[in-house]
Length: 113
Image (cartoon, rainbow, N blue to C red; front, side, top):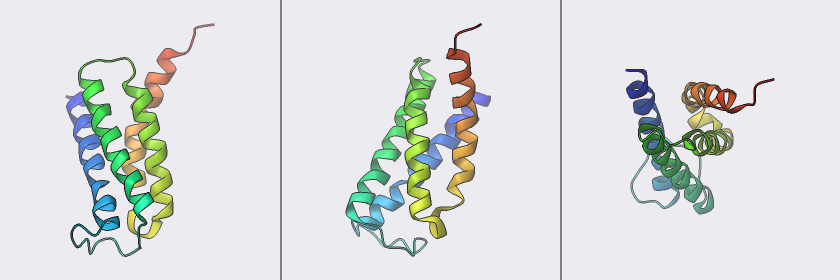
């Protein structure tokens, strides 16, 4: 059940990143986002969405590198959130929730003393 809940959080959080892409390329009105987003930043929002979706796929298929992709997604996501803080600050909560199992997976990879 925890696997399903985590996957759901990652998918929803990842899909929310699409809003930055849509806003940057003016594909549809996104009134929830008040700050301007450059096309370059918009591409990063899209890439992070893809990274989160790949993370879920790898997680569900029990691929050992899921946490590496997830860690990159969380770090880049947080950088984008910082750049759009007034619009995206609550994404930090999702990043923390996602980062916890990633940190646990990293800790499991550390060599024993």
